[in-house]
Image (cartoon, rainbow, N blue to C red; front, side, top):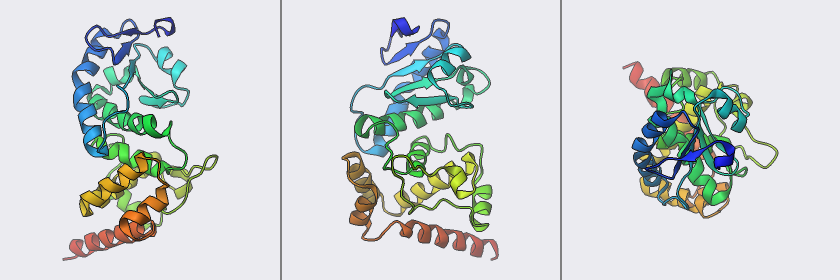
Length: 243
């Protein structure tokens, strides 16, 4: 890794840094244990291996490792979290949440492979945002997500993803912020509805069970139940708004 321009942090070898990012890496080290705790608490299982976090001091470092434009952090295919210098500058306040969000992706990737294609994108992003208590979806609002829902622009939670055909925000007429927010709120609703069932489903997925079959086994219904549940909540919100 030193040949790639990174060196290990003296106090925590889970964190690797580009020279020049020493104070930034110190911040990451100070927040890493709490982020790991939040992920493991939600996922119900420990990390399969200690997570590796790479801290970039320069934009060139980040774009060398992460080709997707516009990101502040990402998990790359060999299951490393890479952090942009923006999280030590104009977006410094986002570091705790974004670190947790990306570690959720990493946790799932350690067990199932990078961004597992047979688990829907909405679930990957909703789970990571749930672990991070909303981080990743801060640029959208619940009101905007509900307005999109009522206009028919909503994630189809029952649609299957397969290798070579992933359903992302644009497939549902959403921007990425509302896609993340609807996905997060759906999983939060499902968890709060029955925490034990949610954890059983999540553990089955982490053991490699089929996404839709595992859901049916735990909830004794199909994924369209999610849409019905969200409809009921939206209708209830509308009714309260007219009281």
